[in-house]
Length: 181
Image (cartoon, rainbow, N blue to C red; front, side, top):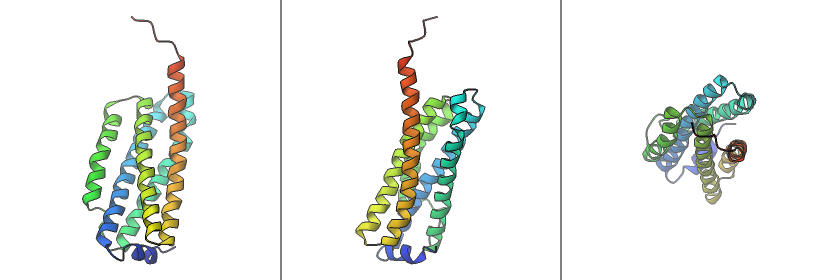
């Protein structure tokens, strides 16, 4: 489905701001793909069967993040924007994402990576929800439908990651502490 018509309707009054919002989402999706890639690499190297069992779902989530990235690039291009421009909101998201990326770069713990991914998925959901609500407020039903499709995928990611973090945390809490050396 060509999305030019609905994006042009959404961007009718202030196309630069709509492009900025889409670049913000795009920047976040790119960061999400990098986060999933790093986590998947660690998961594949893990000897734990529980971790290995999650790889398929994590790969599916990563691939959907990549699809969102590519879709946003297309929408920005159709509106005459630059998908590689660091717009005002894209710079904001880039800065916000640095903390999550720092956890993954410096900390080899898969549990910590999953916690960072949970934070990222919460923010990702909020970003897509904002676009859904904006399209609804502006009466752009087609844009709302496209944004909602991606929001629903992100909600599935969030449910999976939240459940995984909960299980890992329950396991940690239910184990007695190791004796001091």
